[in-house]
Length: 404
Image (tube, rainbow, N blue to C red; front, side, top):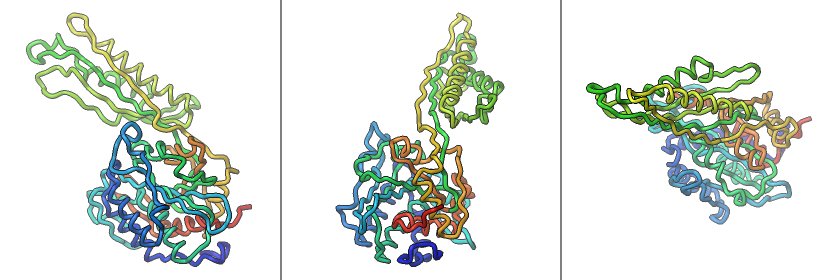
């Protein structure tokens, strides 16, 4: 910790922080199955003397909200030991399925997965560990702090669902919020793209593919024709239309059961992203038009065509925090206070901060050292993770130096 930090704070216990994140990365907990990591965090909180009355969960996992799951969001709400506005620190609990079976091992300045076929799970167990380590250090060092909320949302990886459906009343009305997620410790993510989910059901006409293929309309052929249209006209992948930009992706296609039957049904799942809400809607409309045209163009020998059922829904909207937003200024001050040069970023992925900001809680996101996330090459950069733990402690205690 540099001299610019509050004189009451001693440095974190690096070995304990590394043990914490290593243990947490090894706990299975993909989206909707976060129960085991919640149990672990609750146990560590109680060992640190956090009373049961301060530890809560909500119903974000109830059907109709986040679509079920083992547990809701985990929330710790603490009164301040000194006066000040309530601060919130958060990081999501779930990992992508590729992380199941992760066995973290230290190799030099990095932690990697010992198993070459699994991801590490640093996204976002590194953030979750940084938040947990913060309260453990506050208790260990007996540090004063303003009113404080610690928030571990579930189901981030499948649409930011925990943050979208959190019971705001349980958060204690924080006035300044910090999210810990991917990237190096000097990054402050002040904006992120928005995302629409697209679900398309294609109904063709079944027939015997050998005896009378002309009587059928292939749902697979409709899908192929529509996708070709999107690719050829620049509406799939990276999309640039004049000054407007965005992305789209068809993530999965399923349907059909036998080669001797003209496929009568195919389901397509896709997404459309853009920082511009209106352009995002244009991408969605381009998808709908392409599939409708393809369905109308293919007919059987009786002149009958297939049809599509098209549904789109907002996963999360884009956001951009102003440079003078209190959470941004405070985060940059904390980054500087540990000797790093802060860098703000706007990203093309989604963050829990999208929904927090949309719900009236502007939230800046800070990196914890995760690299190559969602791949088997994922690593955790140890120096960055430890710096993130120091930054989190400064922010939780209000000890960051005011940035000029």
